[in-house]
Image (cartoon, rainbow, N blue to C red):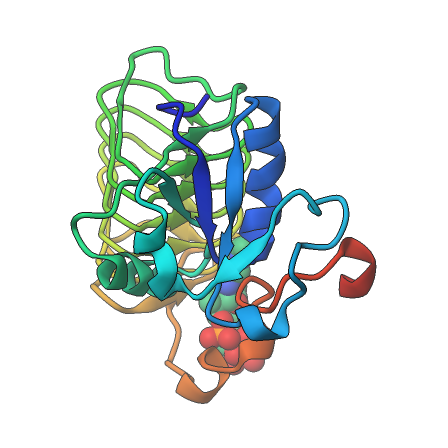
Length: 237
Ligand SMILES: CC(C)(COP(=O)(O)OP(=O)(O)OC[C@H]1O[C@@H](n2cnc3c(N)ncnc32)[C@H](O)[C@@H]1OP(=O)(O)O)[C@@H](O)C(=O)NCCC(=O)NCCS
C-alpha cells in the first residue's frame, strides 16, 4: 500500500531501492526512475530485473520532476537525513507500506517512511517521517519512533520505547519497555537494550553496553552494502 497515486522517483540506487522496487511493482505504481549522484558511473537503466527503471541524474535534478513523489532509498540513517535536508521542505514524498504490514489501530506513519514485510504496529504508537522498518519489526504500544530512524530486520520495541531521530537499530535488537534510544544512536544487531542509550552513542551486546567509537571503521564504505552502486544479485556475490 502506498499513500497516493503519484509516480515515484527513487533517490539512491541502493540495496534498499532493490527491496522497495518489488513492493511498488506489486501495487502497480509507476516508477519514473532513480536519482543518484553516482549516475555517471551507473548504466542508463538499472540491470535486470530492474531494467524498467532509468537512471535519470543526480539528486539535485529532483525539481525537474515536480509531479513525482520522492522516496529516499538509503539505509544508513545519517545519509538519509542528509538527503532529506538537501531536498528541502518543499519536496513531496511517497510512503510505502508492504501489504503484509499489520497496523490495526491505524497508528501514524510519517511521510517518506518505508515499512517492509510483516512489520507489526500494535497500538498508540507513532512513526515519524522517513522511518525505515525492515522485515519483521515489532513496534508495540505507545512507542515513538523519530524521523529518519532505521529499524533493521527483526527489531522488537517494548511498550513505550522512544527511538530518537536518526537512530539506527541493528537486526534483531530488542529494547526493554520504557527505554529511550537517543537521537543518532546506534544499537548493534542482537542487542538487548535494558537502559537508555544516550544520543549518538553505539551500544551492543547482551545486555547492551557502550562500544568505544572507532571512527575509521565506521567510515569504511566496505562496512555497508547500502551505499554502494547498484549491483545485480550475481555481481554482489
Ligand atoms: C554495533 C556495530 C554498529 C558496531 O560496528 P563497528 O563500530 O564497526 O564495530 P566493530 O565491528 O569494530 O566491533 C567493535 C567491537 O564490538 C563487538 N561487536 C560488534 N558488533 C557487535 C554486536 N552486534 N554485538 C556484540 N558485540 C559486537 C566486536 O566483536 C568488537 O569487539 P572487540 O573490540 O572485543 O573485538 C555493528 O557491529 C552492528 O551490529 N551493526 C548493525 C548491522 C545491521 O544489523 N545491519 C542491518 C542492515 S542489513
